[in-house]
Amino acid sequence: MKYSYIVAISGASGTIYGLKTVEYLSRYGDVEVIVSNDAIKVSEYECLSKESLMQILKKYSKKVYSADEIEAPPSSTSYLAKVRGVVISPCSLRTLASIAHGLADNLITRTAVNALRLRKRLVLVIRETPLGVAEIKNMLSVAEYGGVILPASPGFYNNPQSLLDVIDFIVGKTLDALDIDHSLYRRWNPPPDKGSSRNLCHHIYGL
Image 1 (tube, rainbow, N blue to C red):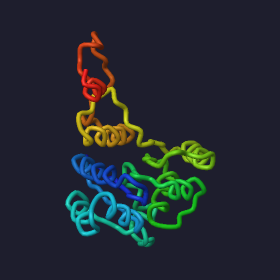
Image 2 (image 1 turned 90 degrees about the vertical axis):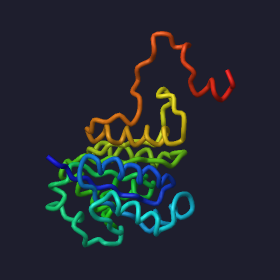
Image 3 (image 1 turned 180 degrees about the vertical axis):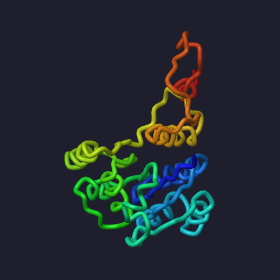
């Protein structure tokens, strides 16, 4: 059975998380993408031009929507019924706040609210930091509604050797939250002799 997923990219830093999530998810099913205007602005600063961003997204997805297309298919729960999961990566704090308060003011937030209504898996990859009380309360609200709060906080027990390893760790955690089996990162399994392997700190300090 081929599953269907929706990935939204909002206007927080970390466009690459959304891009790699779309790329990897396309191996497991059909992917539709929603992109906000702010996400495009952020991408042009830290990642890709609008043209290159859309080129890559269209390569790995079935359809790309603008967040302004409030009438697009994902805005309806009847359409979302066939979707296995919704991911917002990266998820801005404004997007988080809208979802926490049920404000379906664009296609991204409307799709997220629909996912919660249907008890679909909703994963919010929060990248911004530090977090204030308001943001923490909003995350608690979404978690209580059934969403998965997944901060983009990489671990280092997988001994990353490149920036892509760090990115893949977060994307891998996102796939975990969608119950997708993968091998994007090495899972926690410390060696019997912990001091025998060269890890990131050894490289940094030249040990």
